[in-house]
Length: 508
Ligand code: NBP
Image (cartoon, rainbow, N blue to C red; front, side, top):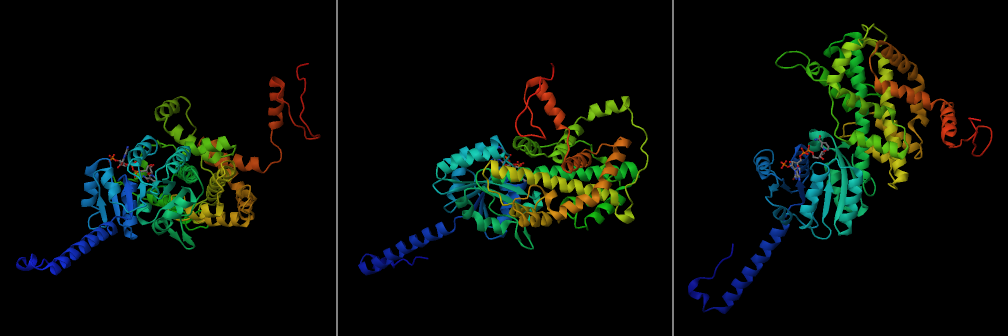
């Protein structure tokens, strides 16, 4: 690149020497320029399933990237495999990682929630500089995120706690993302996130959620709703199988019909259709029937229920789904007790048939699904005012409409309902949802009562029925509960006929 003056004239010509010096200076400047220009736009820590796919997504959208993983061999494997030929570099140490990033740095952490996230933050903090931004895309507890936002922002770093949903495929092709933290930090990554996110007909599935841990709070509730819907679909499957003796293909056909309706068209119904119709390659039998009936839970379902209870929000459908997983884990105990309190043979009852899309069962599933969303949205409304999150409910429905596990057609209706009335107390007050409930509740009641009589547990369907029946009565028996509390503890009570606080001497 640099043309050296010929040796013979070098010492004799000071003019030529000046030209040479200027050329060197110019080239050093260019080298420096290209060095800084070549720094990567985006850094990722944690090459698990999610991290790997998210960094490929960022790179595909034009963001050159650097990756770091605790175990370096995984980084090498990635760079020689899926990362090969991409604008992605690896780093062996965190020092090298930050040096390869343009400033202010934008770093996404995709590691396990809890102590692993704290360890990564501690380790990287010493290399960060003012204005650098850390994004936690793991499933962190929102209270941990509140603490981290406060600590990191006080050190002049940016911190975003971001819920990410969509699994491996979503992470690669476009996830749904729920970022929370300061608005200034969000603004610094808005263009990156908007490009990476799933897109639906009316925009991307990402938006600023709110301050502090609100992004992770919204993700937690997303997962609570997901627990609910998964259990509801599992109960529908159980009824088809045990009451109607349907095989995998027949059940799959019903879920296929449901997936073409305005009420149930969704990702979870779509994958249920696929799961039920998939055969085991070695046995040629339906795989689902070969899977042990035990489901685990990683924390977000539990956090949803705990948050709901702390906020005083009623979430029986979501709670029932969590409890169903807990009960399923008692496999040995269930097998033992089955022998001591045996069930009667199950008699056939009306669930409809394939030709009418199993209408009574469909109605029951629609209402339980609506209840799951309604309860989740109620938690968000309450959290928004108690924690000062200022959540925009239609915007959250928009984020969930694509890319995430609970994406569904119903979310359009939910978005409309909150757009019509931003202070909606519950979806049940919206005309469309109110009509759905009025016209389907009889079928929900008959499915629940027949299942209960037959001894088939339907915890989400029955909790939904109780939830809706409690909602639609002006008369609940808590007057007696209040009487008992006043009787043993002088807690006093309110009356229906006059204002004030009253006490009765019950034992006189
Ligand atoms: P994993 O949680 O299975 O793996 C995390 C990666 O982080 C591993 O490659 C691990 O390195 C690395 N890591 C680093 Br760097 N520092 C670590 C430390 N101090 N302790 C433990 N691991 C460390 O990945 P994932 O399934 O992609 O999940 C990442 C996050 O995203 C989790 O919070 C998860 O809950 C959340 N999430 C997952 C999904 C999903 O569908 N999987 C969906 C949405 C959100 P190593 O190679 O040395 O072990």
